[in-house]
Every structure is written in structure tokens, then in C-alpha cells.
Amino acid sequence: MTRISMIEHDGWSEELRAATHPESMTPLERGTLRIMAHKPETALGFVGFFGALRGERTLPERLTELMRLRIAFHNQCRSCMAVRYSAAAEDGVDEALVCSLERPAEAENLTEREKLAIDYGERLATNHLSLDDAYHAKLKEHFTEAEIVELGIFAALCVGFGRLGASWDMVEELPKAFQDRDAGPIAPWGQAELVGVR
Image (tube, rainbow, N blue to C red):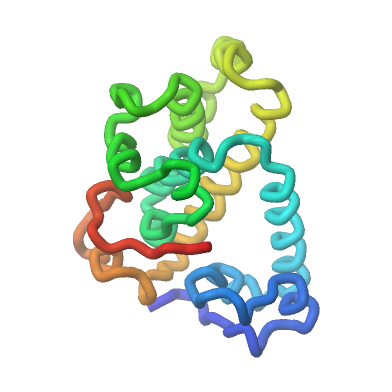
């Protein structure tokens, strides 16, 4: 059971409902906002921040989705691992590609730029102090500074909110494979049942 009670959209503040149009979202798409609704002004700030990040995105959906899923694995955020976004699917993310995330450095179907972005997100999640001068010099061979900032902000959002979501244990609406808390660590690859999101 989710550890913090969820407020469904009819209980959200008028401002939060207006900013998100929750009636057009599935419960899973409303996700952590149902918990953040306990703090409506903070939730509004998050919606604005996420909207700006998404609206100004210059990096490919495929690249950011692969990084997101690898971070979700390290966070063991089951809702993050279970979700597949349609924009990423339209940009070539299928389950065969997701399976390459088991060993991304060895994957032949990932570009060097994608491998580096995945590694960057992974390091931010597991060993952020390894992102030193030499690593940033390597990043600059493949990404502009603006893209590195975009990568960093997006990865930080995935790391922080993925861990928060995992700690809230929001699994009731997920496919069965993602609900079993006693199964130990799971991965986003090799799953038969997933949740599609617009």
C-alpha cells in the first residue's frame, strides 16, 4: 500500500487542476502529483519546472528515455521502470532497445552519445563524484554545454524523484511483476507487461 495517502484530482486545489488538466490523465499519469497535492503550491512549482524542462527539451526522446530507465533501475523505482512513454516509442524505443540497458556499454544498438548519456545518468545515481573534469571534457566531445545542463537537470530529476517515488511505494496500479515487493531487485528490461503513457 502506498505509504502516503493519494489525493485524487477532484480533491486537488483549483490552481493545480487548472495547471495539469488531470481529467485527461490516467491515475498512473497523475502519479506522484496525487501525493504532492498535499502541498498544492509546491506541486504547482513542480508542474511548472517539469513543464519548462519538457518544453525546452532539445535532446532526443530516445536518449532521455534510455537514461531515465537505467536510472530507474538503480533507484528501484517500480513505477518508473513499468512506464513507457509514447513519445519515446515514436523515437525508436522498443523493448529490444530497453533490453540493451542491461549492459549498455556493450550494446551494439546504442550510439556513443546514447551510451555516454546513460553512463552519465548512472554515475549521477551511483557515483556522482566520478563526474570530474576529465569526464566533463568527454561529455563536451558529444554534447554542447546547454545539452549537458539539460542532461544534468533531467538526470537529477529522475534520481531524486525516482528515489522519492520508490520510498512512497506506489505500486498498486502497476502490472503484477512490479508489485511483488518480496521479489528483490527488478529491472525495466525483460518485462512482458508494461504501462503505456502519452
